[in-house]
Image (cartoon, rainbow, N blue to C red; front, side):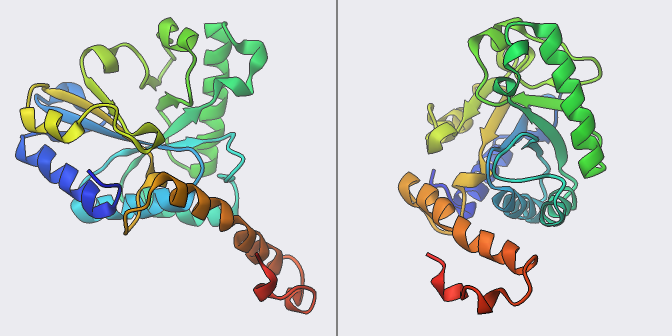
Length: 244
């Protein structure tokens, strides 16, 4: 499949044609053939909001995992709040995307990592005003996967349940490691767990280079726009046309 919104809609159509109901991390037990749709928001909250609105137009709900420790977006900022409202406006679920590398002293200690997950979940819930009851791991180590951490009042999307009872499929690094369309068409698995990254999807097909380069090169203009809000008459100091 291509990494466009139309390509994504074709994927959803295939799922529906094969009788997969859209579930989340709480409702899947109530369903027979079902799919959990999950999105990890590593760096671009705006693309997450666009995909969330597109999913809403398709009549589907999914779970968006937000990285509280991201260097690219701040869930407490005013601009992020607008984007987050576009996500939960589509009745999507909000989850925590947790980076264990942020806490080197807790590495290898499941209880210490659990405490940090609960700590971040409370902060994210405060920032979004939404309950946060599910967590996904950001670039998880083998240790955290093998630990199968059980977190009080939260679902661990990397728990063994979601790998043993589900067929897990991911578009990491803008590449499906298995032929997802063929797997859906085969109807071999009654439960699917599909991870996508909103960063890769757009109106037109882009290769990895253009997706990454576009994001990096747009940062200067975004920074200029932020400075405009904080420096009176920025144009007299530096014109917008000077942005590289």
